[in-house]
Length: 487
Image (cartoon, rainbow, N blue to C red; front, side):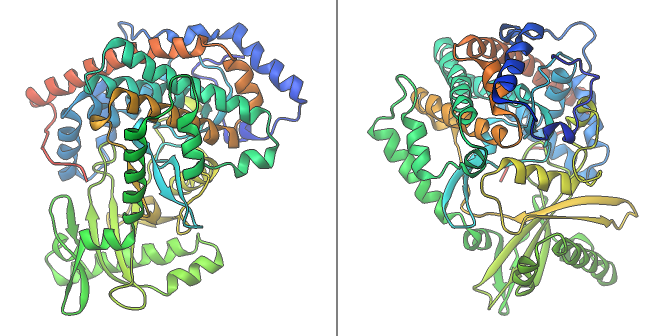
């Protein structure tokens, strides 16, 4: 049954349904009576819609003040950059409307740049979701709408025609539907074991009418895979650090990268901050399995720095931790990133998994959705130097990561990439949601594809208007924006 925005969705609702397959399919189809698939086409802001700039200002209130202008500056660069930082705005819009109640663990910010190539613990290259700051259980269509709209916005930025944009967005939704139907017919363990490695990626590229990639696309895909394999810890070390008197040291690039040694000029205060960060690392290690605690103990911390990350995350507290193992040529680069309350939380009825620990929420959500995770992924809660408790999650800074560049994609390439994203999202949702019920709801026809194509177009218009609202706020001095280039 469809739900209003005030009806809570809790982590407990992800429990496996104790019903027959036929009953689960019937439930999915029954939801159509309350929320027809065609109803997802509608987006109307209404005269009483909230102030989008106020939403961003609310998020900025607890961020590092001197970094907030960088966030606004990055969001002002284009409607696409704005959308990357506007997950809270879209969550408020989605939360105000009816939804299906067909729940899964959500990414919460499923825009296309949060799908990328990653390394599995077995050192295979896989395609998966990479950002879980906003993860919570919720209606499956929220992630799908976020992805569809990001593709529409990216296609506009690329100058694609209306017909080309429609093909891109509908292709992603179609791919999601088709793969969810495959998962609906699979055994439970097979759903959990599914992953999109390089072989599966090729199969996904070949699926769908008129989507078979040509030689140029295959050649570019091959280069992207090869490049991703070079983006490892050694490369991260080479970009972040140099060796001074035989000891690695993070290179300062303020305000984007500010080593601890430059944050506080007084030695005693700097020592306090360094000690605090070392304590954070020690307590984080306790969240890891015993064998990985042993692995981490083989490394010695040699330097730390504050780092500005992303677009929407700018201003949150983020630390880069540089450690070495055998010698200076054996580096490990970790990132400890502050985890706040998910933007979905006001509309799903709770703080999420992990008894309110936001770092644990992120880690457990990632483990639910990702097919292959970082072996050093963990969480920690610490009392900051300001006396406030803050939650962090910790992961390797870079491990065979490859990110898409939609601004350089041809229409066919963007359409193929959209299909791979849709299929990957279906795999992530099928692990925690009910693929039988979701597949029954989405159906085998193109009703949902067309509806989300219309929604994406309407919400992209809304996003452009919100982007203009932020520009006006910067122009009249309500907010201060500074220009930097994201890394």
